[in-house]
Amino acid sequence: MRLYVVAYPQLDNAADYERIQAWRRQHDRLYSMIDPHFTLVFMVDDHSREDFVAEIKQQLQGTKAFSFALQCCTINKDSFSENYFAFLVPDEGYSKLVRLHDKLYSGRLAHHHRLDIDYIPHIEIANGTDKQEIKRMVDEWNAQDFSIKGRVAAIDIISFEHGVLELLERVNLPG
Image (cartoon, rainbow, N blue to C red):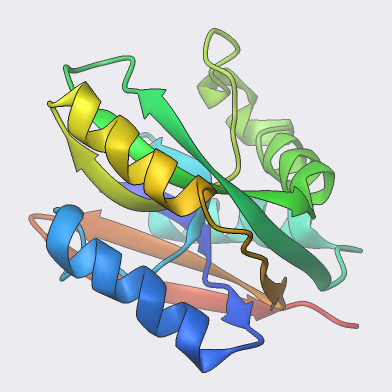
């Protein structure tokens, strides 16, 4: 069982969502499998569904909904393959996402927390092995003055196996 935790952003402007999806449709291999999201917990495969859901819900206690603003696109090299990624990274909300990520990796998931890789909260819009092409995309986004605003108001606990995503539970955040 491959278990994850993601937050699907509620964007303030539908045109921003369409713009992100247009890029993902052309440049992101995961486009058809999952909507734009922030990954908060990466693959965990040593917990039962029930134990994982209970742990995440416990760690989410006291967490409130928060706003973010994506204002920068960055290039990132995958640590495990030859892939490069174009990430939309928040200015506003960055620290809240990092703190939430770290909180979810405390407790029973602490041994899964990758301390050798920086956690960069992001929404992926492109991936590929041609770093110059990914850099060109990043530069195209950053040549514009953009601010994509939204909120994180729910956290989804999911499984993702053999290209099939299953929602195990959605936790709505107060506020």
